[in-house]
Amino acid sequence: MGATLHFLHLCVRVSQIRAVPDSDLGWEDMYREGEGQSWLDWTVPVSFLLVVASVLNAVYLFSRIRLYRMHHNPEPVSSPNAAFVSAQLDFEPLVPPPLLSRIYAASWFTFISAWRFLLGMGPLPPKPVLHAKTSRVQELSVWNPGELDLRLFAIYSPAHALLWMATTSANWMLTLFIMGMLSAQLRYMTVAFETLLKDKEIIAAEVMSEYNTGFVYPRVFPVRKDVAVMTHESEMVNVWED
Image 1: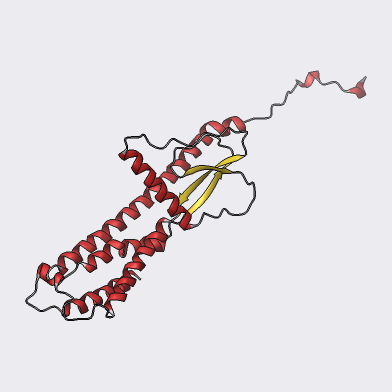
Image 2 (image 1 turned 180 degrees about the vertical axis):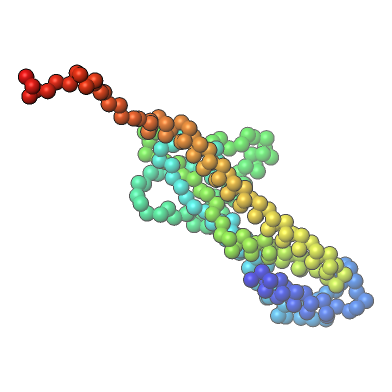
């Protein structure tokens, strides 16, 4: 999918650059790129769709979340994604809020925080801590990206689409090199972070296993042995001899 998107954008840029005279280079190439042609040819909607596709994939990637509720932890956790919600003890899977509402809430929070910073005011006060007897629980919104979305974002992100739009006959080699470095950097960071999470899970599981083996199991399941008491043969009494 990423290679197809790159190929389509390459075809668009080649078609647009071919219309420029050979004498025009550099900034003149970009300035006079559309001279003598209709501004609404097939390259315009295709370029627009390619940029929109990259943006939609990025939005979908960073908006995928999974909700977890901590019913036995009344204290707030140290995470900006935690919030107290009304308790509803059911076994249905939790459904994340709509994307538009999350975008609106994040935009409003950013707007308020920016104005408070410009006016010299402190950050927003934290939400009040609820006690254990209240009927509200703490909900944690965890980012849950998909493998396909991550790979497509590393191969063809909005930055790649903008680099294609800035590509000309004078800088195409440098632009292709930058796009390749950008893809390699994004993919390497993604793989490295996924490996870090897996390593942390392995370390946590090993620590718990060592704790159970060295502390919990010896006390919960102590080693016991059966002990029998025996007497000498002369101490045995035969009731039939009396």
